Image 1: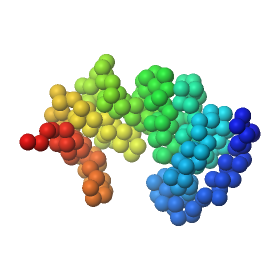
Image 2: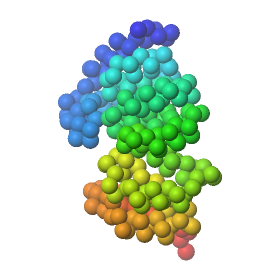
Image 3: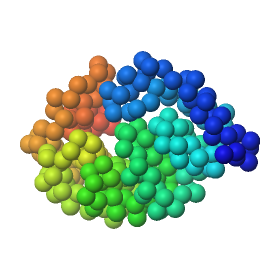
Image 4: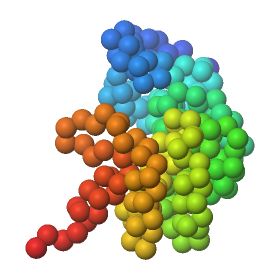
Length: 227
């Protein structure tokens, strides 16, 4: 496949293959991602290629994880229709592709709210985690119209028993409700304290724990003017 700029999918795939690093692959595989290309190198290629929707679609169609990550960097987020984004999400089983698709593409697409609502109710926990990720974004940026109390009801009832990726996304939403909305903070803290989700998650020095009560307290502290 040759794009209008002359760059072919085969040429890009050859470049990605040359960048494959077995050590990077081993590290990525521990996190569920099956590729061995340094993300900095991927971003450098994307910067050179610039936006190319046709090439992005061709790279996505290869099914290769590194190619799909590059596709998400060079695509036009607003050019995808809702049905295609839904299909892409269901194909994006690796955590990094899933994360970049939601954050770099879906969040910039005009159908993001319709997708958020559909994915929240999806029985597939990986798909549902995308719905919760989009909901967290709305909690932070555009909370008008959201039933924050209702979201806390669902989190309280379902988060402790949710599969890992869905649990992580629900916990993120819980934390953002507590951080951004003081009227719901006490309840968010109480839910986090009772459920203890991610309490023992390994946290690097200097980083904030994902345990919701710790996360909420630290971010609120940072927002509070020091006297």
